[in-house]
Image 1: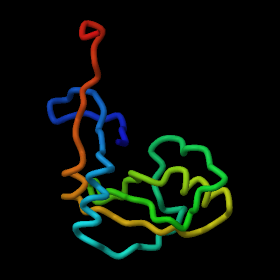
Image 2 (image 1 turned 180 degrees about the vertical axis):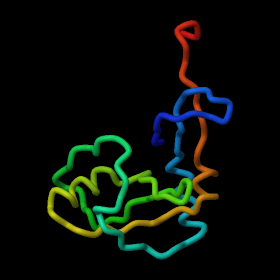
Image 3 (image 1 turned 60 degrees about the vertical axis):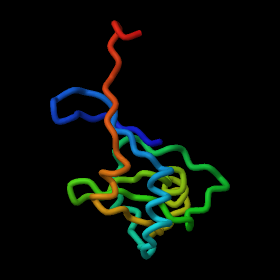
Length: 115
């Protein structure tokens, strides 16, 4: 699961959660081409995970699509490693906006009264 701060339609604050297991299943069920993307064009919504020495930046990232823009779902360490190595492009598999909606759920923040 990947999560990011967000808000639902009612204005409640919480986390948007992305189910990577389901994302991988969608990719297996609906094969698509691996795209080559420039590292400099990929969004950074929060600080990247630190590079890990044995990460293979050639292994494709998984990107979602929200409001027509790419959203990194899986591959933060590989992207950081690619940047560290000076690699200009990475491979990525991109989910459609509809598929990204299928794997996304909203979890509201818990209040202290819920603890």
